Image (tube, rainbow, N blue to C red):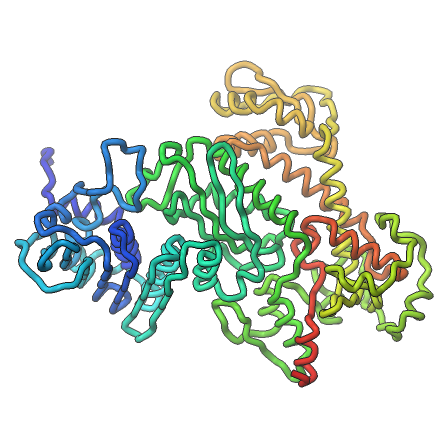
Amino acid sequence: MPIRQLSETMINQIAAGEVIERPASVVKELVENALDAGASRVEIVTAGGGLSLIRVTDDGSGIPERELALAVARHCTSKLSDDIHDIRSLGFRGEALPSIGSVARLSIRSRTAAGDSAAEISIEGGRVSAVKPAAANRGTTVEVRDLFFATPARLKFMKGERAESSATGDVVKRIAIAFPVVRFTLAGSDRSTLELPATGDTPEGRLARIAQVMGADFPDNAIAIDAMRDGVHLAGHVSIPSYTRANALQQYAYVNGRPVRDKLIAGAIRGAFADVLPRDRHAVTVLFLSLDPATVDVNVHPAKADVRFRDPGLVRGLIVGAIREAMAGAGIRAATTGAAGMMAAFRPGAASYSHPGPASGHRSYEAAFRASGSSFDHGSTLARSPQRPLDMGEARPARGGFAENDQAAFDTGPLASADARAGIAEPAEALLGTVLGAARAQVHENYIVAQTRDSLIIVDQHAAHERLVYEALKNALHSRAVPSQMLLLPEIVDLAEEDAERLAMHSETLAKFGLGLERFGPGAVAVRETPSMLGETNVQQLVRDLADEIADNDTVETLKERLDRIAATMACHGSVRSGRLLKAEEMNALLRQMEATPGSGTCNHGRPTYIELKLADIERLFGRR
């Protein structure tokens, strides 16, 4: 077949395949155009999941009549200067409107503030009509009907109406978080309406907008982030470790106000929460990165969801460090959703409970409690749990007696990691004002019951002490060079030349973690020392994993994470066991150490170390409120 020039319509349809994946993609492009036009109100109406109708109305600056024809022409935009690296708007490629018009019936009606009347232009399957007068208020209304009618093969890949509507809602929410001064309204054919009133651009207003999208309980379970490094500013909120979700859908990231789904940012979030969350749980985050547009490339993909950073190691290090520092500074906190699950368990005959999060629905109590990020084991469940302490054995009969005299009879010797106060009987009244309060009893030989002035605290002694030992081991591990062991014969690892060069560049950092390597000719490295903690390890696989990570993120976190996992295992075996009877002074010393240790709200495996039940909640259980 001879080479020929494709028609303009065919070119636009090819572009539409990249830009317009589904109805939600259309909504994203049109809403971004409205925001770039300075809109303070954006209304979206859909029908048939967006395949039959999408209408986006805004009160922005509008498009002058003389520019309407250019607005639907390919590669025409008002948002880009002569410098492709200086992008300060959401849109800039000039492809969205002509791409939509090539596969659907598109009409644009717009009026500027200075215009006496509005004007309208239409496109149907790539054919552009003449501009004509119309009646409209200030702003722009874009209407898209019969999406993909010109490319019916694409319709076979669309999901059901409900799924497409849900995807559209997610897109609107994701964009709305970054623009709290704008009012968003989304109405569907099922008469459901999503309304997000403007909340303002103050810190309180931004958090209020986040709560509109994430749920009213998020602010009470969130930690503020604010950090700067080498011209890159990071702000936002992350959930406390005991407040998690089953997937990463509620992790929102923005680069210079643009919603992105970036694997580097997602990996940094996982790294920051690596040793405080269970492997199958995910943190809830809203992060805003602000940096010089010249240091980030947003022109990676037509959908503009991917970005590339000039210094990915800086960005990753900033995110990980800022989150960990914020969690350490926030002190010990329990998820507010844990009390709801606990109350449901105490309620007589309560077979199910409705989780108070954004996706509320009836489910069993245990499933709901796990969804809230908490963990609670009934007596029989505790004994057979795969995550039970290693020496638990059979469930023991309950001991009677909550009285302090009974507790004073426990005489087991000092707790290994207790501080100097373990042998001092502090006044209980003074301890009531602390975060975890005064220890009142130990029940089932594993749970410490404590009291504050307005709540009841239940602490899992094994999980709590496991975290304390782990943090002490980590501090000792990273405060000095990691001891290494010399290999009898150096291990030669063959790699791609660029991978070998990257490893050589990071050799000094790797040496601090006990891994000694050097170049060994072209495309190879010689490993002479490995961290003693690793024991016998697959050196070849370890080096290749490090090379892959450096290529992706310019970091050597893989080796550090392996060492941390070993420290976690050592902490699990070295912590106070379930079944260990503790004196009141020892219990109080453990509580004080928890208050002073970052991340002590969860154990090394991500399970909560304590649950707090407010006095008001207890009174409601007894019908006193």
